[in-house]
Structure formats: structure tokens, C-alpha cells
Amino acid sequence: MTDIFHIHLVSDSTGETTQGVMRASIAQFEDVESQEHIWPMVRSTAQMELVIQGIRENPGPVVFTLVSSRTRQPLIEECVRLGIPCVSVLEPVIGMFARYFNQKTVNRPGGQHTLNAEYFDRIDALHYVMAHDDGQATQNVSEADLILIGVSRTSKTPTSIYLANHYGLKTANVPFVPGIPLPENLFDLENIVVVGLTASADRLVQIRRNRLLMLHQESETDYVDIDTVKAEISEARKLFSKNGWPVIDVTRRSIEETAAAIYQLYTRFHENTDTDA
Image (tube, rainbow, N blue to C red; front, side, top):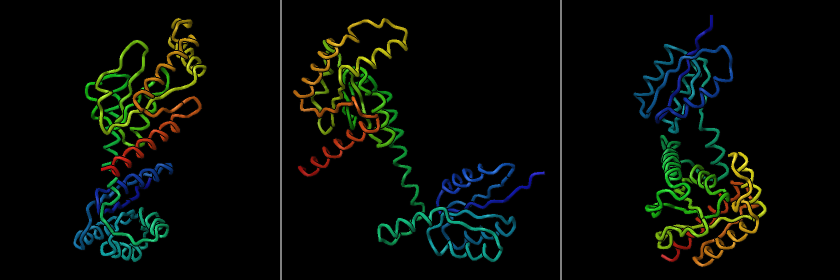
């Protein structure tokens, strides 16, 4: 028969951090069944007394995120008295940063959840990328943080996704196709960074051929003709130059490297804009 272990998760916020750490840790042990006792939003002495009473009734390890010593100390002392382990999830990391930054902490309850806003920003940005991929919904690109323009197979879509997922940037991408004008509103945007993506003709032909093979399509077309591709790249570069859009060559760059370079352009643009203002 498997023993059931009581584990107490005590937090001055929602308790999500302690739950995540506990479950990730417990998963490393086979045949261990645990019962979680979750104690969220513990910020007063009275609330801590209830927690301590619960621990006395069902003794077991305590995992906590409490930044206030006023609530933390009674818990630690009671765990020592009961002879049960008690560990802070945040304290080792906060202590390390305090030493590195040479600063004292502000003891802000629930401070770890300031990341939630960033998380939801990334989700919103990903939704935006999906709705504005490959020239879709260009009528409202004025809501974008970034716009990527490039010929086919210059990694516009994966780069847009990476920028959204890692930097929370709403990124639209628009294909450059010779003979097909870009949407007029792309030329009237203010405070939006537009970046041109390019690559060597040889590299593009190779990627395009692989793409056609994967799709079981005709492999000898203008799409993969080296002279046609060179002309396509040249025409795109002329457009980028005419509009003053910075250009990034993705030939030898990974998606991560391309996104990092674009992010630098984005931050530099806004630094200069703020300075001018």
C-alpha cells in the first residue's frame, strides 16, 4: 500500500509558484502519492495561525513563498519544533540577486506574478502573428510593433513567431512578390519598425527546391530559377532602400539570431524616438 504524504504549500499570493515547483519535484519520484494542502494569500498573523494549525493536524513538508519575515518566521519556527522540513522557493534566488545587484529586497508579496502581464502580452502577440501572417489582414497593420517584408522563404513566419513568443512583439509579415504591389498603408506608418529580410539567391533556391519536393510539386519553375530569384532579390532590395527600411540578410543566421538582430533594431528605433520626443 502506497503511503500518502501531506505537503503544505504556503504563499502570500496565488500559490501557483509553489504548486508548479512541488509538482515538478514530486514527478521525479516513483510510487509517491501526495496530498496537497494549499494555503494562498497568507499575509497576516491570523492567517498564518490557521496554516500552522493545519500543519499540526496533517504534518508534512512545507514549501512556501513568503517574502515578509513577519509571516515567514512563525512558520519556520513551528516547522523546526515539529521536526518537518520547510523550504522557501524564492529565498535562494532572491538572495543571489540581492548579492549580485548589491541591493536590499522590497519584500513585495506576490512579486513573482509581475511576469503574468508579460505572459499575456506574449499570448496576444502570438495571436496577432497568426492573424497577420503572410500578408493577411494588412488593413490593420498599424496595430503592429514590427512588420517584416521579404521574398518567399526568408523565414518571415518563424521569425515573427519567435519575436512574439520571446519578446512579446506583435509582428506582421508581408511577402514581396514581383509585380504585385505592397498594400499602400505600409508606406504611411508611424512609429512602427519595418524590416526587410533577404538571403542569397543560392540559398533561396535550395530552400525553395526542398519546399517543392516536400509538397510534391513541379521542381522546375521560375520560383527556383536562379536568374529569376536574383532579380526578385534585387527588386526587393531596391524597395527596402527606397523606403529607408533596414535590411537583414538571413542566409547564415538562425531564427534566433535574426530575431535578436531585429529586436536590437526595434529597441534602437524606440530609444531614438524617445530621445527626439
